[in-house]
Amino acid sequence: MKKLFIVLLALAVSFAFTQATDAKKKKKKKSKYKVMEVTNGGSISGKALFDGATPPKDETKTLTSEQSLCGDTLPAEKYLINANKEIKNAVVYLSDIKEGKAAPKEKALVDNVMCAFVPHVSVGYKGNEVDIKNSDPVFHNVHSYIKGKTTYNLGLPDQGSMVTKKMKRDGIMEVKCDSHPWMLGYVFISQHPYAAATNESGDFTISDIPAGSYEVKAWHEGFGEVSLGKITVAAGQAATATAKFK
Image (tube, rainbow, N blue to C red; front, side, top):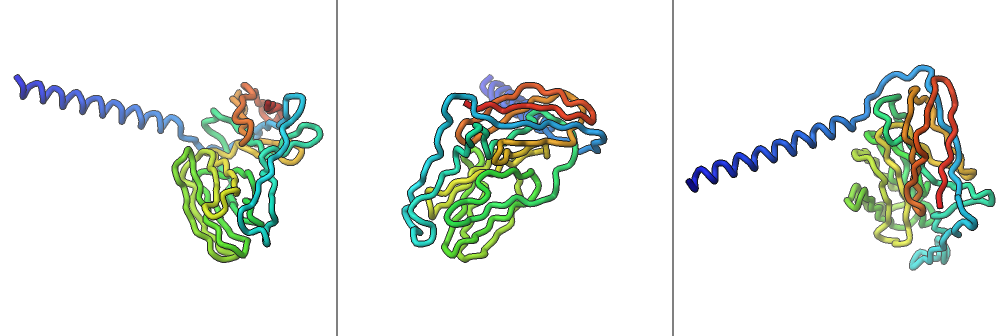
């Protein structure tokens, strides 16, 4: 009887493991983006705006070293909001698109410039490469994470040092420097090309979108994520949307 119980228990555990593995595979397969030719696609354009009375002021970071090169303080670049309440460095993206155009083959860039990451926020594409560069005449150690797990941990000892890596995972990649704790930047790694960072005027445009209705979201390092709702894109037409952050 005891043997039979052990056999049945083993079979039950095996079955549960198989079911969980199959479910995981199905989920992974379901989320995969499919590349297709897009003809007469539409677009979504708009702005990222602060929706409140007084926007937060950008923070100032105090340097604990390298003052002779980079000065005593640097702007955090966390809240870049102009007089019209337009927000720079928000990333607007289609969260539920399943198929569309291929991502451009261009590389992303993480550069160490005067003890700060340039660009502060950028968009990259899963499967593409990222150049991680040191333009400063001091040692930098670039350490990046997605959801708390290390993606890269690279020492760049010399001015002009550069390492090229493949972006194997999508998600918001947080970039830090282990040698200079005030340094912080982000690469929004998208599974598809339908993501764009806003400029100094808060503007964004996402183009060549297959006709349809899509959930549009926006992320900002200080405000977090907001939903712009479902936006309908007609063939060859331009839709508009506004990302409002509080």
